Length: 233
Ligand code: ADE
Image (cartoon, rainbow, N blue to C red; front, side):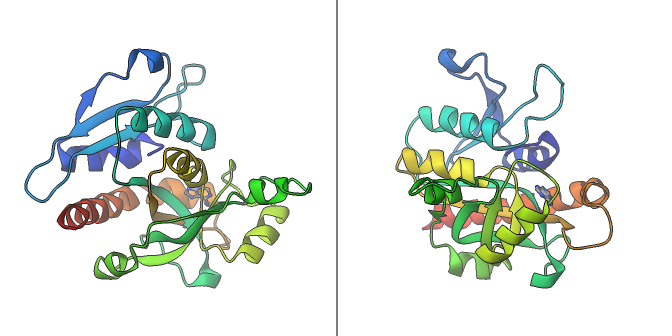
């Protein structure tokens, strides 16, 4: 997860306890916590990007997300990686604030434009997600392609690329998390709660700030249910 405000409700609901990062990662901002297995619930390692020492804000975006995922997976093998957080949706796709999406059938990037043979596909970075369609339906989640870029706004070029890709969920970490999970041979999914509608006349930052706390609560409720059902399987 990227932001402390997104992660705090889930950490509390799971009763996850902070652990030290391995010594090789001690200088990285990632914060790790572990919730032990209990009943149907599997052990959960919660990795949050942490704060940037230079600016003091949460390290949102793909660079920190890749580092956090690598540190978490370095602790030992995992059955699945879940990139969880908040995201933008679109009115044109019938999204509503508070909707929770499960990434399907892939996670991709929209702001890596490399018009060179082979590198164009690398830039799009499409990574297939675990097939959790049934579970998503049981949890009342929507399904959609999650697309990642390192900006909160949507430039004209982003808009064109996102429309062409068919993506329904826009955020800033999933593709980086998915890439590192794939490098580790671990299945990946994304669970994203909508804080803002990108095609609304209200500024994205205003919507995001207003809806962050409520979206983090829906995210927490969905994540706990998802984790318990995954433990069942
Ligand atoms: N996180 C929440 N809303 C977002 C948006 N519109 N774009 C990127 N990341 C987001």
